[in-house]
Length: 181
Length: 86
Image (tube, rainbow over all chains, first blue to last red; front, side, top):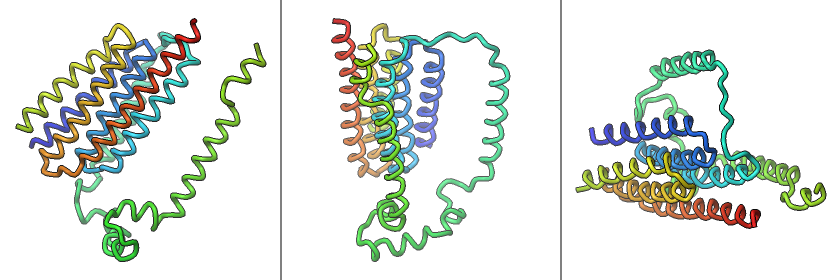
């Protein structure tokens, strides 16, 4: 029961932050609210026992993306442009898609149900063999770094290439500007 | 005891978020987000003890580090902007 109240309160906070972030005109306050949003959602992940996801959310959501937003903000105007277009159609699309997703979520198995299909595939193999294969107690690390090691290596290569591409395209932002001026 | 502490943490984070939303200057907002981060660290630790799983403290420590890096990055932007104006 206490967990229900904690999670409910956290989701309520998230909703409030999201609404305020949409309403605010200053870009800086939106960035700050996005940082607070991902901090609060990291607590929700901890509360749902998804500690590894919470790690990623805190590192990428609260740390890295705030820094990236701030870096991008240097090249942007300080205030949002107020758009008065008719957004009724977009609202309808959002509501329909949201209702479809909520409807689809009724087919999901119960949280923590050991008979759920996701726990029947390779999960039992990992649970029984990680200790003997790798000699480490952490299953998540065992799966990511050894059973799916090539997968992780590929992801790292993709992210590294993307970062290199961005750096090559943008440069460090100093030399190019001097030549233009 | 933990329940009361969690409630106080929640209340304090609401007040801080209010300051993030309204804060007249950017410095108020930075300080308030930093305070929210600190409250999140306390909240995770308390939540761990409340649910009898206090092994999540290392995550709280990680959050403390990330919170610090984020604040430093934002403040660095401020100093850069000031140097440009001067």
